[in-house]
Length: 122
Image (cartoon, rainbow, N blue to C red):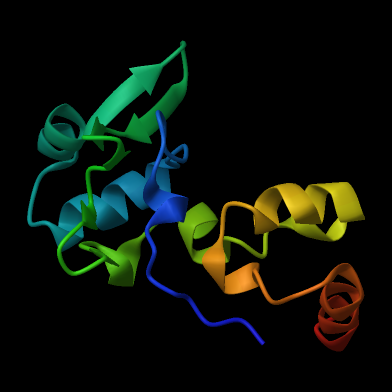
């Protein structure tokens, strides 16, 4: 049903996903960095509490544009793992269409097929 097309659309934009403390620790360990080194080199703080990965040339800093893959794939954040099948996509047809427009892998799918898929995975 869903197969990533490696288009990079999910990694593109002016911001990235928020990182939890667990994700910060896991990614830092994967990169053989201390948490403070990781935070300084790869993240940016938004507001008082939100920490995101930096954006480089319009993409998440960990998106490899040549290979069209995530450089931290084994430890990427939960929100990245869920995309595009995040809870909002199942809320209504309008939400589905908004998300569908940002993901090539969903282009051939319609709302009825998505609802069927959701029922299979309850």
